Length: 219
View 1 (cartoon, rainbow, N blue to C red):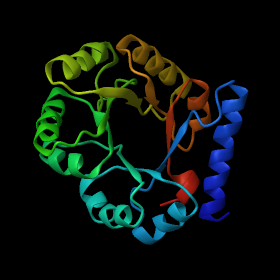
View 2 (tube, rainbow, N blue to C red; view 1 turned 60 degrees about the horizontal axis):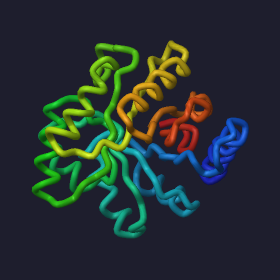
View 3 (spheres, helix red, strand yellow; view 1 turned 90 degrees about the vertical axis):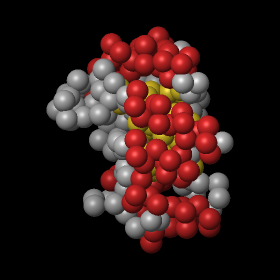
């Protein structure tokens, strides 16, 4: 299959689960994860109609996305990888959505940059639903308090929650937990599900799924 065919296949699979779950058509946003792929690999996906992309690293993104966004201004770029506080200025300048707000230091750095730049990317809090020590994210039991701190003390508008379930566990349990936390926090957006489990994520209420290898192929 070509990259264009793989993109259409993923969209069709999302649409099928939307129908089976009695969710409105188009209620799930596809974020095409283009990390490690070059400009020439990404252009065919843009030409096929995809406009929302996810990247893991600020520095890598700076090397390709200013050019691509200049060519196609309606592109929406998501940061879905860990953010260091010293990259907060660059992240606010380049990304439209930052999905990995996971600690107070980052939240404060983003709040400062949003004030300085007058540009406010949409923000998601990353939750470490599996309590994995090697993985970024706020602990589930701290999520509500952290969202309130971001909103009330720092003036940040938190739009949603994001998670990456442990690879060896049933992802549905983690998606259900994230949906529960979102209700408790009063946020509407749920970024969950990747190439291996995005259909399950749609069943559990994902509003966006982050799909890389199922579209771009193996890296």
